[in-house]
Length: 196
Image 1: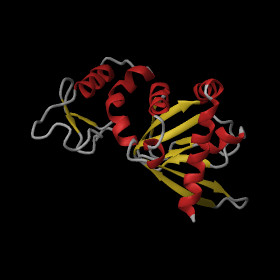
Image 2: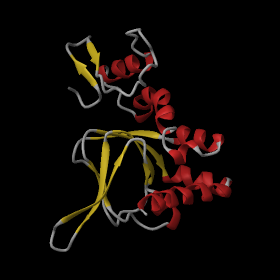
Image 3: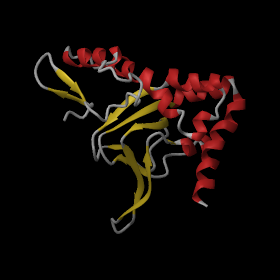
């Protein structure tokens, strides 16, 4: 099985993986392949690799998935749309590092498929797992809030797809509309409350 959710059988044929994020019941009773998935496959076959083209397939599927997370579901409509518009698809292979502790902040992430583990390495070299972040959870807000570097190592536990909202887009948003700082602080608080 290919890590992009498509199993290739030949140069011009493919199957949609049962785990593809097309929401159950979205095409009830009909084996219809969504046009964005077909377009994604065609672009991959012709070698178009830009982020914008790869993100086309997720435009339709990301929002309903993310709405299942209480923080995103509770955001003002305009802020939700701004995050989705600025978002870019990031794909990670199992074991691939997204960022290391101490690296500069590069933005905010939401897990669309798969999961990441967040942890640290002790002085003796032992790995400590702090959290496993599954879909549709968000992470990376602490470095946004305090302007500091990343606090933990983060890597994919399996083939993983993320929505990445780059830091410059977030800074522009919060400069224009500073009232949204409270929304990002609420994401951090949401996690603290869940921990106790």
